[in-house]
Image (cartoon, rainbow, N blue to C red; front, side, top):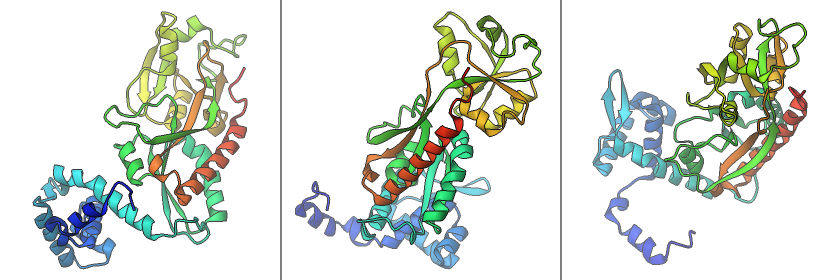
Length: 337
């Protein structure tokens, strides 16, 4: 029991008319309705008839004094009141679910849990295959769901448990409105930055193919990987400190598409050297050292302190730590001069 809740508080809750007539199944139905935004699909997921789900929605509307779901265009959307209820309702359901489970250990081989991991696409390509192999060996019925690390309200989803862990660069900042209080971090691995340029780029001479001179670098057009669509990048900051600027001709959100585009254009990409471990050579790209020193690219594992002692969460974090060691070995030395 939460030590901040005394017996007087509990008695007040028991006699609270707002709680006395609420069926726990209403909360579960509300969560599914919020996910599907469709009465028919929500009914199918819960294994009830459409009329029963419609009746449940009417009861929810009576309890909350709010329509909760309203029509918009060809579908339905949540009302502001419904969005406000989402976090506490999901948090309460998760607490109940985990409270009823055996808290002493995580039986990986018996578990049918689905873990949700928020990651950038570069980490997906390098770490998820070995992670799935570990999961297959140790927990054959466990599933993994990948969601973008820039998913809206990531902090809230970590707090409620909708997202179990997030993998993100140390430099990535969470939205200002989402206070990082309660988040825990652990560095998985570090990488250096490198320049990616196609092998037959006109700026490369036969004699000078091992590096780009600084004055040459700033005259070229560049691609910047920025999931948020904003800048500046780490290179832009380093150049500004030297009174220099480069032209960022293309901003794009993902690593995979960046490699393909750079291989077919005269753009230069400055990115983590780990990118070369994917398919840089196959695309005919050269990996060159950066013309100015840049700080290492640190990749952190982030989770909420509420689940720090959760055995299942601890198991997942340890598996990610193990596969990150594998990733670190794979990229060791890539892109260094």
